[in-house]
Length: 153
Ligand code: SF4
Ligand code: SF4
Image (tube, rainbow, N blue to C red; front, side, top):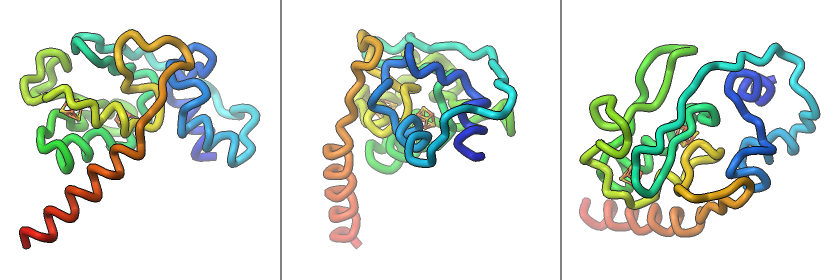
C-alpha cells in the first residue's frame, strides 16, 4: 500500500524515466509484487530544474526520502539541500530556495545524484533508461568519513 501511495502521489512514468531499469522504487514495486496502482493518481503539476550545468532535478520523481539532503550535509559538508513545505506541499529546496544552478554551496560533487533512489536527480545528458548509480563509491566514502570521524574523537 505504501509503494502504491508513492506511485500515485508523484508522476512515475517509468517508461520515459532516465532511471528505468535502475531504480530502487521500481525494484521495490517488483519485490512486493505490485502490478497495478489501485489508488487514484494525483498527477501533480511539478517542474524540472535543469539550471545546474552538470545535473538535473525532476520533482515529479522525488519520493522525499531525504538521502540527498543527508549525503550532501553529512558526507560532502555542503548542505545545499533542505526540505520545504508540509505534507502534500513538501519539496526540496537548494540553498535559499533558488535554482540549483545558483546555489553557491554546491561543489558539483555528484554525491546526491548517486544516492537518489529514483530518477529525480540525474546527470544532464542522460537518456531514458541509461542512468547507472555508483552506490559502491558512496559506501566507500561513507566508510572513510566514519573512520575519520571516530579517529578524531
Ligand atoms: S552535487 Fe554534491 S554539493 Fe552539490 S548538491 Fe549534490 S551532494 Fe551537494
Ligand atoms: S534522494 Fe532523490 S528521491 Fe530522495 S529526496 Fe533527494 S531527490 Fe528526492
